[in-house]
Length: 414
Image 1 (cartoon, rainbow, N blue to C red):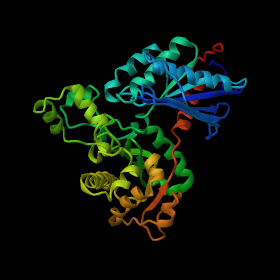
Image 2 (cartoon, rainbow, N blue to C red):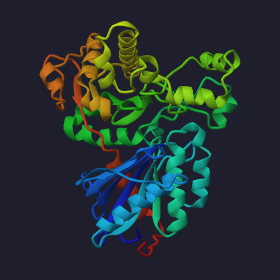
Image 3 (cartoon, rainbow, N blue to C red):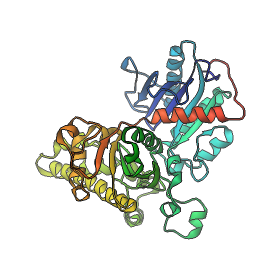
């Protein structure tokens, strides 16, 4: 891996690091913006588990062995080696990292140095499923390739346009002054939507738009003129919608009860809220709607829990879309994206069925086909499905931040 001139057949490498996986994508770096389709991409998954594997474009996933003491470092080293082997004379101009939380200090894509890394470490408690792992990758590359440009692209950045009334928490005023506020997440996905929806829907997208990012994590964003004006995730990535294993919005009294009456430790409560709740916790079957739906007809407790999990999942989405429509003063465009949003027709159908009062009506065939427009001709709200492309947004923004830097450093090949 190397540092060099983006315009001299360079590439930008995007890393998206989670607790058990590292996804990567490699984009050409010569154009601004770069092409939306990566040269290739891939991921290591199952890090820390008994059966990790690696796969990339043109290569089916295959089992790998990682150092038991340092599996994350080993996985990153494997990715670096695979990328280097396929560069074919290109140089890595910059590495872009998806960093979930920038706190109250960082919103724009930021060139990373040791000082920035220290700042970002302070935000780990706000995003424990993602922040520490992105920072571990950054720290390793800073140590081993100090001249390689790295840029943090923040999931909170897109929501910097939220009005203060959407950011402030109903806590004592000094909490606001200390930076306790609603930040919003999934910003790279919403930033892509702001580009793609304008291209597909024109002026309609500049009106009253709600985007539903439904994946293992889930949130909604209300946009006006393609900017964030309200969102469901807040101070942390636990807020808002019910998710795969996360609670979403929860009465804080329930947390106090778990700690005071049931005597759960802080660590135990954290595991419960992040890893044992949501669809998995209620259904007892899976964190994925496509799996849970296959158990709805089961007899006994399994079927009852499956039905309740999906009903609650849909109810929370419907309720929050209604709240965002109220903030917007109506709804012109509703768009589903991310893994569940793009591929689960039955989730979209159930959500839109319960939004009929807003004038939402689906075309069943288009919905089953995951078409780009799935609303019927007589629907008062246009409903769409739009694949997200967070990696491209990170590549675009990192290249621009790198090019705008007053000094650009080059490095030797790794």
